[in-house]
Image (tube, rainbow, N blue to C red):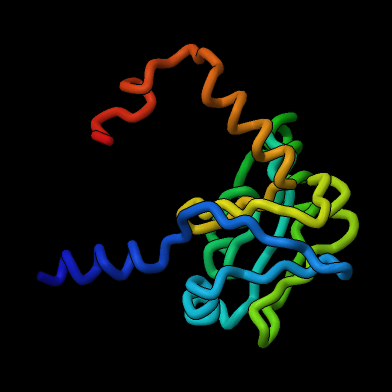
Length: 163
């Protein structure tokens, strides 16, 4: 029984789903209502937003989840070119943000420019974090992903996961 309670607690705290959201004129984004309590419980509304090193989107973490990621990034070997690239992009662009009483976060102008965010954005739940995409760019990527061939079969990628 304890196992199922723990499993439920983990699953409740996961972010999932696709949310189409508008940025206001100041660059604020409203976090979907269903996640605001989790974010407040995990990190009292404190979050980190940074760039994705491989895609034109932003990554949004509750501070508690980011602390684990940041430690792993900082533990990477600093004399390896790719490690430094990841450190510079993820940690170098990371910004502390606070969810306000209305459940909004302010995305800075430099990060909005990097991710090419306009008024319409798509927010994707990815377990312990969110991805924030410009809506047009997201739709273009989804179309590409659905049609592209890959080197690996779905069975290889998914392992023993049955969907």
